Length: 132
Image (cartoon, rainbow, N blue to C red; front, top):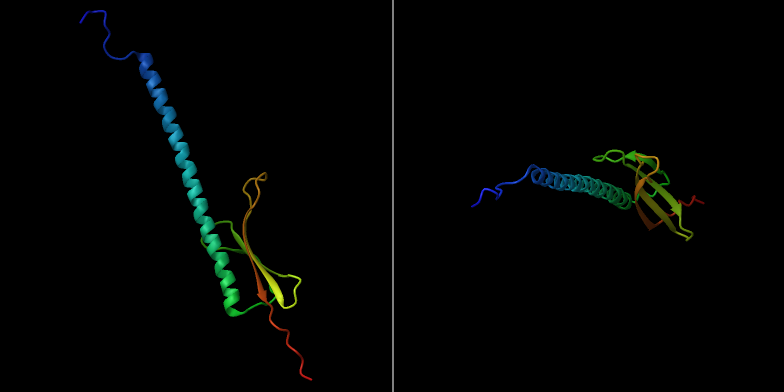
């Protein structure tokens, strides 16, 4: 081995290797952060969907088709999600519509609200006939 042959790495090669490593670590950190945020959002939506389905099943099981609407009731288990129940006419005799939806107001003004909605047509309760 002659004296002119170099051994080891130069300072420039080490700095470049560290820079490439840091860029890779930053990319992995960003992807992990996005995955965590998406996972949390998916979990929230699952809870919201379950709350809406539970409310619909509760209304159908109790045969409670009163016209009392629920406005912006907080959903237990998730932050800033609100459940509403509205009844509406579907234009057919003997049927009414039930709309159950959940809404999460946008955190930024430019973003739209997040929503989940269930709609079901059901047989309306017959009106009580006065005794003659």
